[in-house]
Length: 95
Image 1 (tube, rainbow, N blue to C red):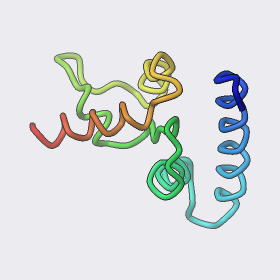
Image 2 (image 1 turned 180 degrees about the vertical axis):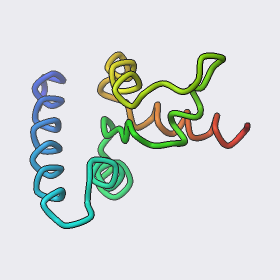
Image 3 (image 1 turned 90 degrees about the vertical axis):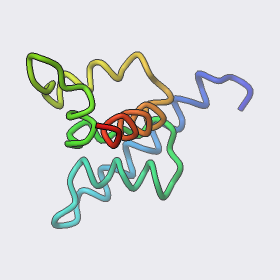
């Protein structure tokens, strides 16, 4: 595909179908599906927004953000949210 936006939309569609199929399995939720998409499939936009390490990395004097707040904040990182997650995990490890 020559059009980056079409390519991104195709990846996004594939990713959401995969997540939905994977979450049918008992014990597999959004975090696990996003983590598998990021690590095993190399999906650059996968983002486990409920991950405690990601939430802890953005903790400030007011406490940790809620997963919904982190997800909203990560929208500006599209289509590279997995890289944002990697960066935040590194920040959390440095604490």
